[in-house]
Amino acid sequence: MHDKRKSRVGLPVFLLGSAMMIAGVSVGVSGQQTEEKKPVVKTRSYAGGRDPFKKYEPLKASDKRPGAVGVPSIQERISLYKAQKSAAMNARMPAPKPTTALLLNEIQVIGISRTPRGYAAIVEATPIHLSYVIYPGEPFFDGQLVAIEDGRLIFRRETVLTNGRRERSVEVKPLRQANAVGSMATAGSAESSASTSKP
Image (cartoon, rainbow, N blue to C red; front, side, top):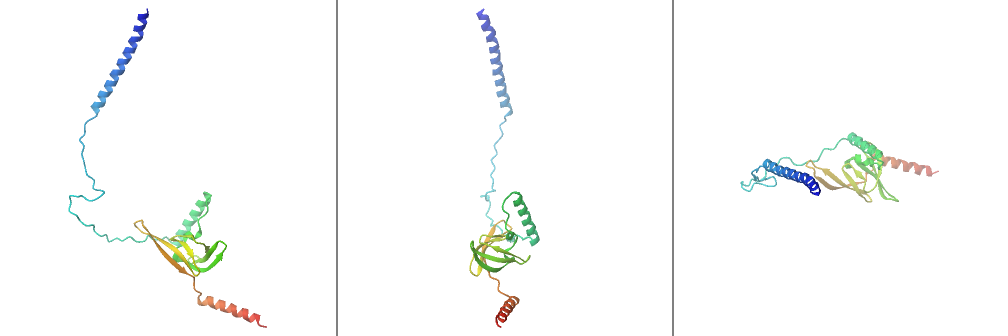
């Protein structure tokens, strides 16, 4: 009776093991049949340099020289500034300075004053006739205010070229000189104050 139990258990185990072995062999055979030996073709790529077996030919100088990228109009820059400001307000971030819409050649230095925060400059945007108080580090569309000295402002101008490079240069803006109308107005006010002081 004990031998019958062993034979009943042994036979299914034997059949299961042989079925697994046959399945493994067939998978191996099918894997070997689908793999074909492909010839390895070695090709050289000369994308990184020139072909060493060709005669050297110097590069031709291109007639196109990289130039400055065109600057958008003042209205386009103002609309871009408004979009940046609304996006910053929606993201609860500090709004960009209004001077980011101005070019360096569109401002005139009206005056320089000393504040508790340091030197400040009063500039006028000539296209829109608005005045701003600016401090060192103030961004502009094509540069940044670097320093304020006694009679001048020092800017770092950044020019973007068509090939993607950026050129940086230093630009100095002096105080705006008083024109004839302004000097007459100050002289007239001085005379009127002098005449009122006399009895």
